[in-house]
Length: 182
Image (cartoon, rainbow, N blue to C red; front, top):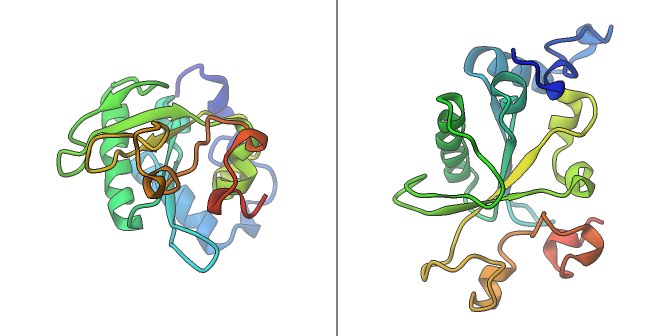
């Protein structure tokens, strides 16, 4: 563990007196973080909205931001987040504004820091692990077939709506499927 202040406020580092009450999902998250350094939570597409996936434990184990992806197949996002997690584990610094090539099938991704006000909407298992925000989260955005990211005006309407814009405060986010639960 490093001296990062995020690393000592989680269920692995501190006994809150409720470890015996942990359910199977929580025990799986803790086990994966202990064994692999992080866990990837996958939320499949359903009648409420598109699927998404995010890491839990990268900040604890490697001092790196947690990562979140939206709008693709959850298994593909799982693999992509693991690829980026492996980069972080090997010492690559992941930061807001970066682009990374070759994360999956040569796909370029862009990293954007998520606004803390989105955490309760999307990152409940991570909050349970860390016990409270803040822990850093970077949204991993993917481009359309023309290489345009969803925040660019030249991107088609469908692509602009395929992923949230978590760097925006919820009150400034365009109304759509990602804001329906707010």
